[in-house]
Length: 145
Image (cartoon, rainbow, N blue to C red; front, top):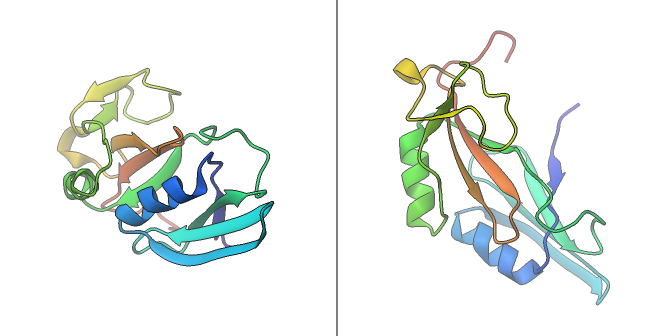
């Protein structure tokens, strides 16, 4: 099994499409079968998983998706690239307990994980509707990955 699509609930399809395309995401599809159904699919660079959003795609409230992860091998470079493309990205942070497991901003400590420990450094941003994304720096994969 492979996870290939994540549905992201949005209020304004064109605004969201413009936002994600500005981040450098590839447009895979934009299909409408009428005024009540439109689906847009975009894929982050290097990802095997895409996002879809649109009209009539989900009943979830716009902005209700939180904790969507984008794994990067260099958190500072990825953060800079997203900022250059118009995203409002947080400063890099790590978790006070050494493992990111808190909801919201609880337990966040400013700066990267000590030694840029793999899986330990994060930055966050939201799309125009408030769907929350996390960048996670992974330099060495856990066994079995």
